[in-house]
Image 1 (cartoon, helix red, strand yellow):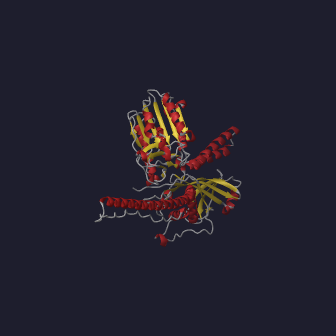
Image 2: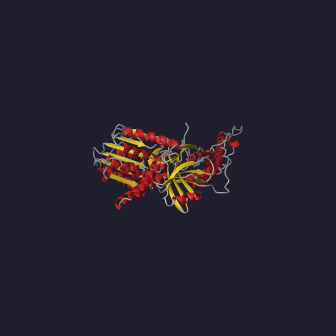
Image 3: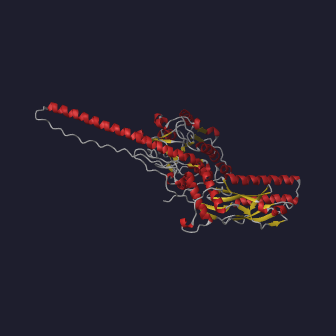
Length: 591
């Protein structure tokens, strides 16, 4: 199966000329086999710039120590003049010598393995640390690469001198071109009639500034400004030109994954797939353009009618509201947590005193790696559940980060269950690390904020079997659990249990009363649970919340919606991020 990796970028891209003297890759036709179009040149240049910026020298691992072979056993023959007792004594001595020799070989091999593992870990950590320094800047690196590529291919933008002026509306109509390539865009901009002649007279001094955004797999021209004689004019994108120009930027420079060692796996954090940006469509954003047009018409209305002060205030308020909408689209469209916006539009349900909500979410652990966005997902989940299912605040227990220590979780859960009555429904939510314990046949445990993965089995209260048992054995008639955690030894495609590197563990199956309880889990088998950077949430939690906002009555439909969306989004992240939510229990129960 072919997987598509898309890096969503929301920052702005400024189209300016490239720095003088900077060396750019050759785009000679003899290299690529044919004459390149402007968009193909941008593709090739972006490829090269990103690859160069992310380059890190791969480590050379030492040779693996050879496993020693057991020495051939020595054959002993009883001597002609040797008593059986003496022969047995001699046999015993030889056995002892052989055992000592084998132990010595084992000790020597163990020493070599330790040295080898130590060196592999050092080299791998150094490599990962080198890449880790660059990884947070992938968005900036990619945007800068695009900016350079546009500047190299298109050169410097300029305003063509064949301007048309609409005196009635005090508006210029013109075309922005570039010193190289085939860049051409129509624009219109307001210049007061008394300043229009001087503007056109100094047209050669006009400096266009084009701002692009990259979001939802589109490179969008979102803003045009023109500077002339220290005055800046905002140009309006002509709304009739919405034809997409497709730019394919597929960065494939080979995998950075190193060969796994049977002694200690080398786990590298970044592969070429992490910065492949897939297919890009170039267009102007029709939604932003439409809002800009509304803003312009309002301003024109105010000028032409010379309305009263009250009317002017009203128009100003409308204009400011439109500007806020434009800013929101430019700054946040497609790249932020939108659960709050979606929830605001949804219908609130009447408070039901028979419903209980127990939330545990740990983003920052005391003794291990964090779980990105767990705290935010917990906060959003609480709001969604309370509004869409009518759960009262007094029936809600929320334990996040330092509020989710082992003692607090145990006490709060016990206290809540003591108040639950027959006919009640419990909703249980967990977002954090899940730990399989090898010494207990990979029995899964929840990890409290103050617990170490190494000693998690010391507290049986957090064994998943015992957590589910306490819930399903309660007086509640229904128990619905949402577990945004995997139990494969890692989270966000990163190993958690020291010593197993990237190895994924299949957790032991957990049993509970499946007539009255259902568990919807983030992933199956050896899969990891993923974060969803584009929405600042856990991937599973995000689609559970969206599903609950859309539908708050049918568990079967909710699961189908969550599964299809999480599976599809994880495929886009890459093969190693595959995540398919599963359920266990009574799917026919109502939410």
